[in-house]
Image: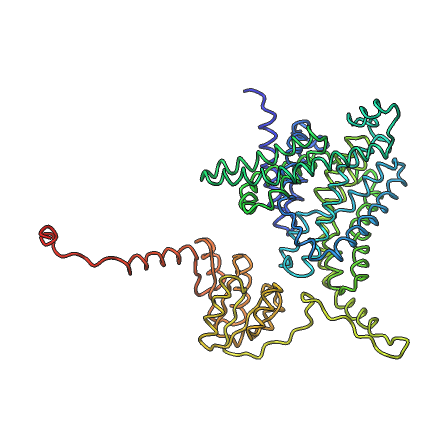
Length: 591
C-alpha cells in the first residue's frame, strides 16, 4: 500500500476531533476544546501516531482563509454602529490594557519587545466561536447585552486584522526575521539611496493595504456579486458552492501575490464585500460545511503545536497567562462598561463573554513564531491559556450570574447618595435586557405561548380572537415591546429557566404552546410543564419524526411537524379544486 500521509492525517484529525468534540459537548464545553485535544494527541509531544506537521500547517492555512472569510461574511456594520459609542472605545481600551499586561509578562520572561507585544495582543482578543456560542446558549444575541458584546467583538476582530497587516512590516525592527524583507520597501530604499526605517516600512504597508481595499471597493464590489448572481441563475447548487469557495481562496491568494497583504486580510475583505450581496445568506450557508471542516483542521493543527508538559515544567507563567485572560481582561471590561453608565448586569455579561481567547490568538501566535518574534514558549502559553480559559468560561458566567444581585444592590446604593446640594440623584433606568424582578402572573385557566416568532405570533393572534386568557414568554427585546403594545401580558426571559416558568402559574394554566424551534429547549420546557401540572395540555412543534418522538417522551400531548402540515394543506387544496367527475365512459365518448 502506498504511503498516504495526507489521507492518514485527515482521517486521524477528523475522527479524533469528532470523538473529543462530542465529549466536550457532553460536558457543556465548546467542541473547540475537543478539537485542540485531538491535535495534542496526534502531535509530536504525545506518544503514538504523529501527523505530518508540514501538511497540517498547509491545511491550517486554508482553515485560516475560510475562517476569516466567515468573519467577513458575518461582519455587520449596522450592528457595530448601533453600539458604537460603547463598543469602539471600550474594545480599544480593553485591548490596550490586556496587551500591556501581556507585554509586561513577556518582558518579565526576557522576551523581545516585539515578542511581548504579539503575546499581549494574542491575550487581548476573545474567540468569536466561544463568545457567540455562549450568547446563543443563553438566548442573549438579540438583547442589548448581546449586541454590545458582538459589537465589541467586531472591533476586536478589526483591530486584529490590522495587527496581522502591520506585524510583518515591523518584525525586523523589533527583533524578528530579517528586516525590511518587503520587496517594495527594498526597491524604494535602493532608489532613494537610504533606509526607509520603521516609519517608511509601515507607510509602504498601509499604502499597499489601501490599494487592495480601493481595488476591492471599486472592482470587487461589482464583480463578486455579479459573478454570484450569474452562477445562481444557472440553478446549479454545486456551481454556486464552488463559486463561493473560488472567490474566498482566489481573492485571498490574489491579495497576497498582487498587493503583498496577508491571506487572512484578503479572505476577510472577500467575505465583507460578499456580505453586501443579496445572496450573502445563501453564500454563508453553502460555504458553511467546508468552512467548518477546515476550521476543525485548523484547531487540530494548532493543538499539534502544543507541548502539554510545558504546563508541568513551568506552571507559574501558565497561571499568570490565565489570570490575565480570565481576570485582567474581565475586570478591565467590567470597569469600562460601568464607566459608560451601563448596569452591573451588562458589565458582568460583557466581562464574562471576553474572559477567554481563541482563533485570532492562535493566528497571531503562529505569525509571531514564524517571524521569529515570539518564542515557542509563548505559543505554548497562549495555547494553554486558550484551553484553560475556554474550559473555565461557563464557570465565569455562573459566577457573574451569582454576583449580579450583590453588584446591583451596591451600585444602586452608591448612585442614590445625596448630592452636595442635598438632592438625591436617581439611578439610571434599567436597560431593556436588565429586567427587574417580575411578579408572578395572576391569570388562571390561561394559555401560555412560549416564543413569539413566526409560529408563536400566529398562535397568539388565534388565542386572542377566542377571548382566552393569554400569557406569552419571550426573551427578544423587540418582540417583547411589540407584544406589550398589543396589550398582551408577557414574561421576559428564557422559558427553559425554572424561575421563569414558576412565574407563569403552570398549575393554574389550561394549555401551553411551546412554539420555539429548538427541540432540545422545547423538551426541557415540556418536561418542566408536565411535572408542574400533570393535567395541562402541551402542544409543541417539531421538524422531524425523531423530534416528535423526543417531545412526546417528555410529555407533549400534541406535536405538530411543519412539513407534514404543509403537505396536508397542499392535499386539501388539490381536493377542493378537483373538477367534477365526468359521467360514464360511453357518455364521454358520445360527447
